[in-house]
Length: 336
Image 1 (cartoon, rainbow, N blue to C red):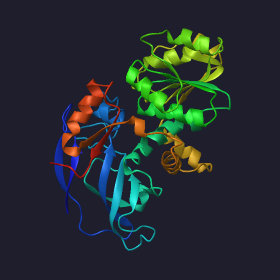
Image 2 (cartoon, rainbow, N blue to C red):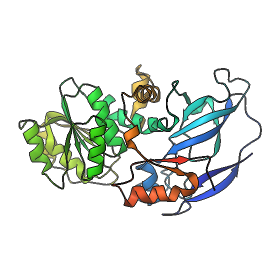
Image 3 (cartoon, rainbow, N blue to C red):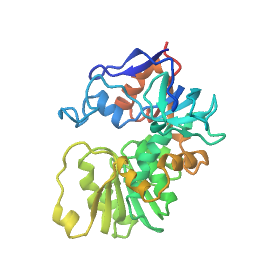
Image 4 (tube, rainbow, N blue to C red):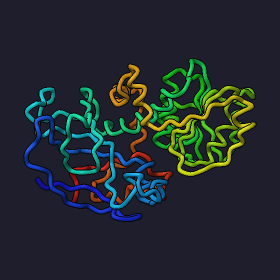
């Protein structure tokens, strides 16, 4: 069958391409119709703008053109292979397929049934939420801790909500974009700092009576923010790099890390595989439940719903109009 998908043929270009899917399914495969896909403001924008650090590395893998974006999707089951017994036609799934009209998945692709009654537009946020969950699972969060989250985009907002759910007494959202701080308030994050209006270090000193934050999370993707996070970390605190900072930063190893006993932790989502090996629940399943039960609020994060044919508007908006664009869903059945 013929299907359609988005592709970045080169820097700052997004196009629609047709491709063919096999008519016959393997015994452990399913055919799905993709309904909504959430644009990832981190990975997808880094590829769209050709700023991903993998581009100069020949054997990096996916960082090259043409690039087919997307990994946060809600899909409907159309057809099943002979060995698929747990699904029915019309079942809604969270999947990690790209921005395409249809896809064929195998058991190894690990799809996830959505909870009953969960709004379908909320399902794709599961992908970003499980990335944010890395900051919890790799931290030493304790009941009563104070946590600072640098960046209140999708990942930072979700991390802030999860830190509060995990027992943080105070969660401080930091962002220069006023609208994102307002959205943080709607999501239950009641302390915010706008670095344009206030000195972040001085403000956190005031909030913590000079003790600093037990956990500081970098969720901006900007390397220089890591050094700011170190400044506000408490004695024996943790600085967690969640936003995939692509590049280098100058860090005071003695006063920033060594003397204070601060731990610097990389929280790439792939590290959660280790947690699952030791008995933790699958992060996608956990986040689906949290979003469905509204323990994680994602509706305030959804700012735009666009047809797939207008995807370029979404990428350009996320790149150039950060006050207005945050959570952008693409209708993967609207290609005209």
